[in-house]
Image (cartoon, rainbow, N blue to C red; front, top):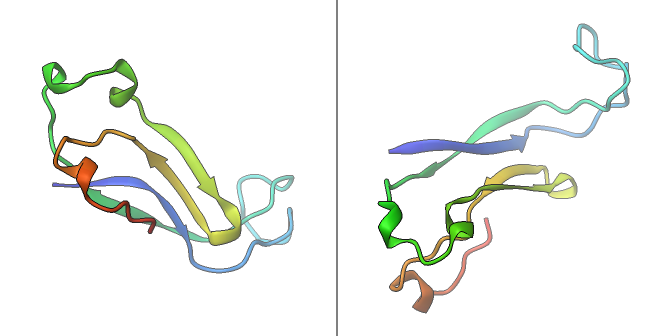
Length: 85
């Protein structure tokens, strides 16, 4: 099932107040679109650490990525290479 995990930039950052009808005129502005990933329900008894349940912000403004990440890896995933999209 696809789940939203953040936003990806569609263009360059605009100076604060330079985009008409923006909600906030004091913060730089960038047009974005939703990023989706494939999700899997995971029973809590399969977790080894509570941290595997938590999500955190991992923004890369220079690359135009604003994502929520989770570091859970199953035993089979641990042997595969890590992809950085």
